Length: 238
Image 1 (spheres, one colour):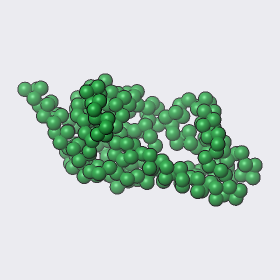
Image 2 (image 1 turned 180 degrees about the horizontal axis):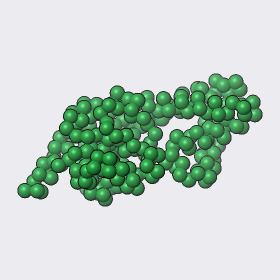
Image 3 (image 1 turned 90 degrees about the vertical axis):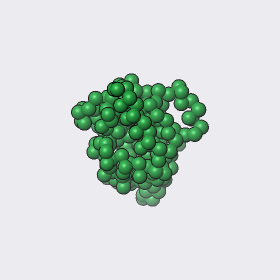
């Protein structure tokens, strides 16, 4: 039977685009208000990103380090900020990360998590840098892991294996809930973990091509989907 339910975060428990746009705007407001101000984002933001990634390929999943490095290079362009570069970058990152957690949960998310936490151990396994511990739902999770924590992003197995080890459970005793058919569903399925694909009505038409145990478009349906997985496990054992 199922013992653990893991969750992706962005676009699974909340839409990520509004959160990123809000965080970017807060960062822009802060940098342009400096004396002298720093234009953000710079026209060559992609070139800056590419340069940093060429020097630090692992920053591709260490998103906080990536943003910090880009900001450091950007601030250094203004000679009058050289002595305060580290302080400016530290403050800018504080502002961005706080705003990054300014999310609006999908309908039914908090109720589903509350109900499921009464029966199962819950954890978050994410490639992103949102801090679920800062949210109202943070207390539902017994384990919170990111790609940065384990040194590898999904679809690599490290996040899933770390959760299995932490809870001392077998793959067939875990369900993973995510929105991405490759990074979430396929990656977990290959390890023998049951999966719930949280998708959109439009994408559900390709559900047969995604190896998910269950497919939902609304998180209010998640507890029932978990029940169906448990029922199938019980039937297979009979």
